[in-house]
Image (cartoon, rainbow, N blue to C red; front, side, top):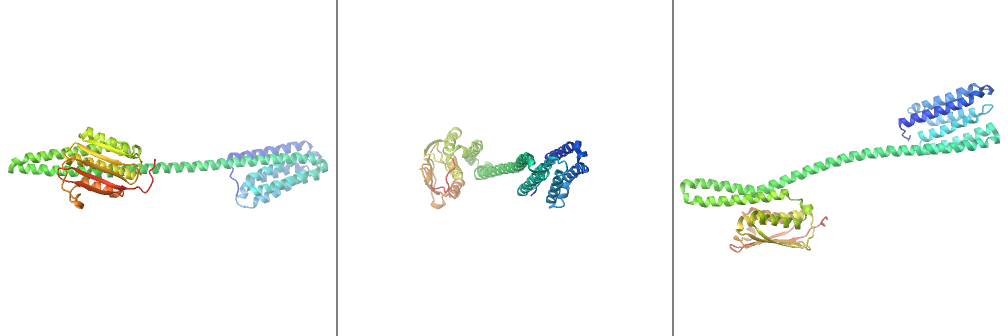
Length: 397
């Protein structure tokens, strides 16, 4: 695989080779008349540079061309070293080929060709100068190794930079996708919140307002037929409106409260009990055993059960006192909501029939794996208990 080189670095390589080629020609020019084949002093480097410029263009069409190219260039350089009198500085062309090989060939092929160029330097200078050329050989070999190493390091740095840019681009794309996912998650959470609010409104406020509408219609019909019964209907209508107001306040407080996941169940229940006393006059004796955090679904279920239980007391129990016992010490967890208010006729499994609030509590208890039980009698209050709550997963935080 051919290494990737930026246009700027490629231009720099071309300019460097041109400068070196011109410097070699310039060094040889004053002595060209001493050379038997003086034309080679100019045409040899000219052909060398022309082949260098066309290498990339031809390689795009003939994949094997780089090896043919380096063979021809090595032969030209070796021949230039044999001019008489010999010009040792033509060995610098082998050094330029070593740099080019590191930049355009795969790592293994480049190292093989660098070895060939080293042999070319040694053989060319030995043929030209004999043993006297050993000093030249060592000098050019050291230069060749150094510049090849520099080219290798420079190429690695370039490829690392390209890889870093590629990774940065991928990270930017991933970041954009995460932002999009976060936006979608926020939208989904908002939709779920609206759906939950709609469900709460339907289960509580909507039912109460519907009852108010029926009561108002009944009062209107009785106004002409039996005016003595209108007062009772108006009293019932007032009670229903107070219940609706209480339910709306509860929903508004729920929307304004900090997220349950952040606040925690125990803290949220304490805050809610304080708000019920402040807004509805219901004094709640709250007993919490333990502060264990539960998975969010379980905390939400228990909070809604307590919330609905207190709503029922405010609407139906005709009392200003309630007791909530919440066990968070160890599983199985439980919660009890009781009052000493009006109570109602307990009918076993049918106790929730016709009671929207109790039905909602029962459904929420089943959703978190708990068991729902209720005790009540007229004039003796009501006791709701949710037991056997055992989360299957550990709480987070």
